[in-house]
Length: 265
Image (cartoon, rainbow, N blue to C red; front, side, top):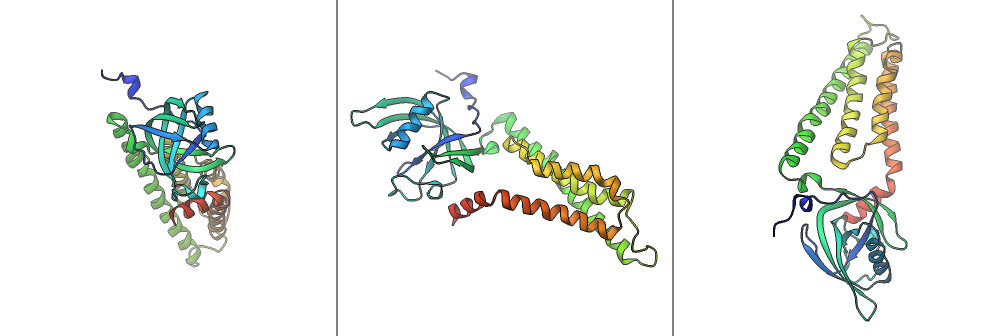
């Protein structure tokens, strides 16, 4: 019997998902995967998900000899799935049948007790089909990609104009400010780039990059004030904003970057 249309739609991935480590098993999207569950934390995980949405993420262990691998011992790409069947066996372990769905990537680890929990993102373009796949690709590589390129070009033009103001002492005084099109080319181009980056994340991962979005909107809001600032000072303000954003993201995501680096080393 053919599946209904609703059956073909993969369930939405929740914000936080329990992670079931796999030692000697490889799972693939859109397959039924039988698993033996014997670790205490894995048994509790299964019992908990069965009382909820039944969803979990299966991740392969880098070292099959480890009984209870932690985040650093697991791969960062796995498969989300729904527990379809569960059977308790006399020795206390479980046998489960998981309907595997889409591939997912670990974005951040949210907890390790009583079992592993992570925030994940879907490989949406890979898993999308038909019209949705075409629309996702068009949005990502056309409508959202073009503003990124336009922002880069505008910033380059704005920087060129600012440096010309600073270097051309014959026609411009040291304290002269950029105004009109030149300043909006610089600040507007950078704002466009940051907002487009955040929108690209929203389209593909479902969440905004808040700090980049806020930085872009703030830059647009203060540009009228920056028209009264000397060109050299304007460059310092823009550089400070960019360096501040980079520093903030490096600090905020330091632990996540470390784990990703460790996972791929």
